[in-house]
Length: 142
Picture 1 (tube, one colour):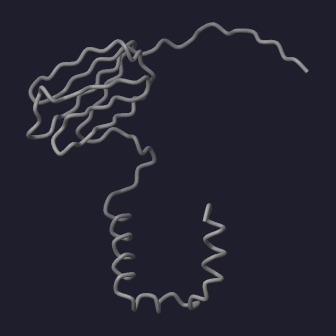
Picture 2 (cartoon, helix red, strand yellow):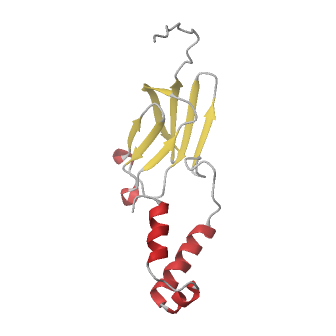
Picture 3 (cartoon, helix red, strand yellow):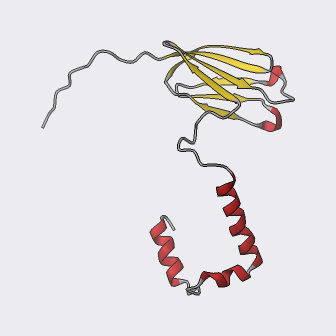
């Protein structure tokens, strides 16, 4: 089933009872539906799925981005690995093999980075990529 339409066709042709309440009589299915309900109502949905979490703060200056990441309890400074891409910062080596992925609000120069740990916080300074000022003329061909 590649898309929702295929699923709907399959579901309508599967001869399930029209009233789905009879499916609640199956305990496994009822538990599964309840888990889905709890998962969707437990945390408020956010429009931006990469929005900074409570342990991440991003300050934006004219030419720099400063990311402050609260390191979890039990981290080892020697194991922390920092990777920077133009649009993301990835922090590895956290306890429980956790990887933190932080979406940046602006593109940065991935080779220019200063990072330090102060008071259990990882502070990362990145240089923003300059916005192109000049327009380039392109010719249209038939």
